[in-house]
Structure formats: C-alpha cells, structure tokens
Image 1 (cartoon, one colour):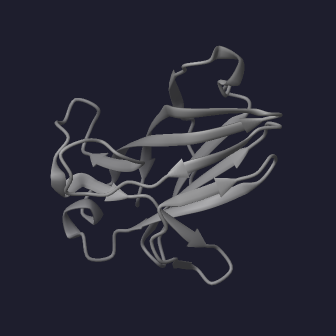
Image 2 (cartoon, rainbow, N blue to C red; image 1 turned 90 degrees about the horizontal axis):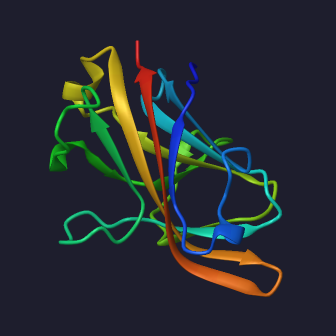
Image 3 (cartoon, helix red, strand yellow; image 1 turned 135 degrees about the vertical axis):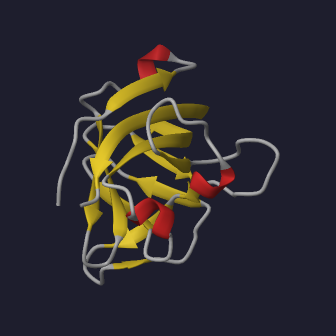
Length: 159
C-alpha cells in the first residue's frame, strides 16, 4: 500500500470555519488484492462535518465525486468519474451508497472505488486522482455552514 502527498484547494465562505491542511487529511492508496482505490479522510479538528456524496448522471455537480485521469492535463470524462462510497475496512468491502457521511472530530472514515472491472485503469501504472469533496455542513459550537467544497489531488501508483 503506497501513500502520497495530496495538494489542497479550498473554497471557503466563512474563513473561521475553513479546514486548514493540518485539520483535514486525505490519503489515497491502492489495495492490490481487492483492486480498490482507498481514500482515507481524517478529521483532526474540533469541528464535525458532513460529506455529501455525489450522483453521477446529473447536469450539475451536486456532491462529492472522484475523477481518475492519466495525468493532470488529461480531460475529465464520464468514464473516469466515480461516486464516493464508504468502505468497511474490517470487512474489506464497499458499503451501500449513502447520500451523507458524517465525520466527527478526530474521526477517520474510509471511502473507496472498485477498479476490478475497469481494465483501462488497471493497465496503467500511475493514475492522477482528483477528489472533489462537497462538505455540506460544518458544525462548530452553534454555527453551521453550508456549501463548502474541497479538492484533493495526487498521483497514485497501482502496480
């Protein structure tokens, strides 16, 4: 299992409730035996937040989506767009789709994409991964903020 540094682009409405790079950590790795691209999200802040999971096939970006590309310059296409689905690390399986994943302070959650039947990705040795997180609710004390987004990008080796 290999891990890589991830670059962060943040769009914030209320700066006081933004996540810094130290508060929200994301690791992407490839589980070769099960051929699952594993995305680990760790909340290292005192804030709780809900990640709204995406729906593919709509005309607008309405949730969290993972894009796979050959390199950073490759265009984004529908065949490289995947839903963010929770992953059960103990059972080593993807869970059923849920529209919201709630992450409490100092909690770690796992998401995944099954690449088992996606030969065009498995034939590559490196994949450029872009994750657009739709953070719909952030709670800190009595304040709730809606409609934030975060982007994480990295290269991942799948050899």
